[in-house]
Length: 508
Image (cartoon, rainbow, N blue to C red; front, side, top):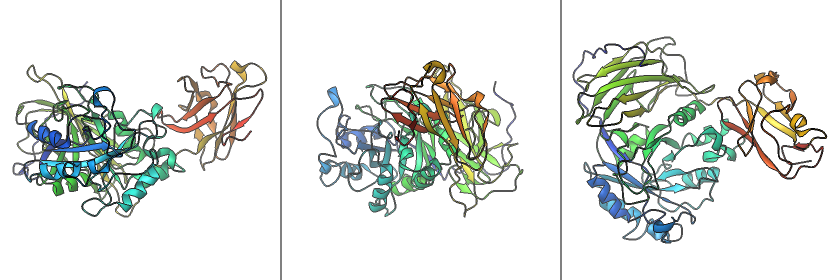
């Protein structure tokens, strides 16, 4: 159940000074300037009253970003850029007006693109409305380079509400690049955050439980992204700071815009379902979110954890340690688990975790168990500490070079038995097809488990032979899924003629 229960030994050092404090906020909210309610000034003021230390308003950048029903008002920063910057009632002006050092930080940005054309990303602190077509994430990177933020650097980017592999073949521009590896290498320098918790965006009310995306967080880390977990309330009604207790916490020296933004750039952030649970996690002295030099392979990592919850100082905790490196299947289970009670008077030691090799990273999931007064259990997800050589490029696995090269949707004979697909392995190593699948638009699947191993450079033609997935003669979309469930290829075709071989590039 709870893994090994141990007595955690406090470090023989002075009490943590908490010079680096945890500040709690929300990095995803809307007003009537896109598809939400109210004004930026109203939103910032309420967020401060609700106890948030900081909040970002991130309006939709495009002309399709109006709401519906009581949220549709025609006010859009894409149609009237002065709502974003340039006027006394602009979002940027409201952010400046409501920011007070050591009291509250008001941030601004934009939510780029649409769900159907690649999901949403937040782009923070940019000076003007983004004019890149929806879904053009390669174009977005070029725009960000040409429009630096208030510090003169390329803007900070956050992946919003990640989707499961079955729905994410084009998320965040994956389909804009030749390979998955190129996509990761191009996007990773700009993206520092990914939403692990997203509140019920389109519900008007308070006290909701935010939706967790732990598996998606682990999947993007496994792809090679260096991202910290974030939280977006995604407010579309006047419930800023109230819709949920979930917060993104930022570990910083002070509550100023410069300090908060600098900490976010360094991924010194964690996602928490408790609105004020302070967490300081270090590995070999590096703060969670850091990229640090690898120690000796096989050596024990020095993992320490300091916790403080001012309104639940005697809470009971479980700490799960997760370890992974890019490539293969994402982590699904902790390598070690610890239990203890109460706030730490000195950092706790999480012992017995050993270093596996360069590219390895380690992170924590912390569960604070509920009592009768506080209800549901609350969880925290930390950013990893990555162990990488400074000269190494972002770690990203070479994706399996397996692709569909042709299909026969309408064979001469029984479709149930004779429909066929031909695969090619253009890589340099053989690939076992266990766990690989095909999937159509109706979510029916064709398992490739029985196909064995596909040698490097070889092709393999498979007959359907009764598999549940069929290929519609009138046209369909077929996806190739790897063993993690990630879509690695989408094959669309129109009307198929009897006996016709359809090649992937559309030629017949």
